Image (cartoon, rainbow over the protein chains, first blue to last red):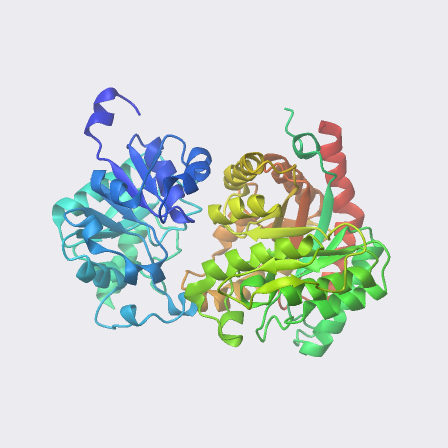
Length: 221
Length: 355
């Protein structure tokens, strides 16, 4: 929080999921000056301790409330629970999908076994009333805090941001930049498949230049 | 700074070795058979006891490169040849096992070893046991919650009444063999799930932080969460442990030279199933440095890193996952000896002089 103006203008982040990833993202978003709400699978009392210790400054609330109040919803639920997720909860919202589908670890899930689409495209098809942006998925959630660097640092890492809606992509790109990473914009969710497990970006800590290099090689190949 | 482990949690420092049953090689680099690997682990456990190591743990796995699917049997062989060392799982994949059977096996080990058994319960990050025993991976949360609850009941040592959805109900069920005295120490291994930290505190289990990548200090909020949660549930203080991988040799150079090619080979293999990029020499250097999670080097280097991280994590137990797959048996035995005779005394010295 650098100035009062920045806290007024920054959008509210609503995190759905208080597992491995949700609190890690919430913590760095708060430190970047964003107002943050977080929900677990139900009663906020169940995540009160987790919120207090791991995401100090965040508001724990019911999922519906968190989604309703948020400008950017971060969907951080276990992927296998997505098939029962209610799309109306996030209708009209910008939704960041940071989940991954990788059958050797998650087990085969039929919903995501369509070779025509990336996992985020499948998420978008189910959340047809939302604007889905794929980001944060290729960085380890446990590294997200330690690897932050101020803009212009030579070792600042890059995160891909992919989506079909330009305004939504820019909103999420600003979040990425404010947290402490360079945002590399990809033109569509379809392009975002390069960020998936098994791809050249996943789990590889890349600077903006190295990221660009990978994209060039991929296009040339 | 009043935050040395003994001051913060009041527990004595203990040091362990963990193995996943990694298959090692002979002097020519040829991998040994599963049977020989298992016999070697008994030899490693006996050596660990003789050089004063406090704990020896075997992690349940079901794969060709980690053939330790019945670690408790191996632990009982070690128990028969040792006097002091504690023996346990690291971890038992409780989600795909029956808590009653796990209790029976480790209560038996506890009897055989005159009170030296321990159990570390895990939800399982490698998932090979789920399809093998007919479990659905998407049920892992309910499986672990119910089974860790039942296991806590069993540890009370009284007839158990329990109902749930993941196994048959029990009514006033006497489960044998009975505990001789105190229940054996039981820990929950946590890789990054805050719910698991809270669950460990709620059921009164000790906590082991499995730190297998990135900065160990980032786990400090988890230690704080655990200590707060213990207070919240009005539980007495319980110890915190750290599990990480590494390798010790006479010098930093020798340790790196022995470990890096084996690590690279294993990570190449693992990256295929986990989907992440293969590590580089540069990323490896970072991981074995002060801000990484791997403990590779001379006894001095490794001891300093262990001491620093125990302190920052309020932990009193360190468990080194030793013996990366493909290392020579002789290098592995040398690592055990140096860990017991050099590293552990040095860590005690560093932390003792600060408290």
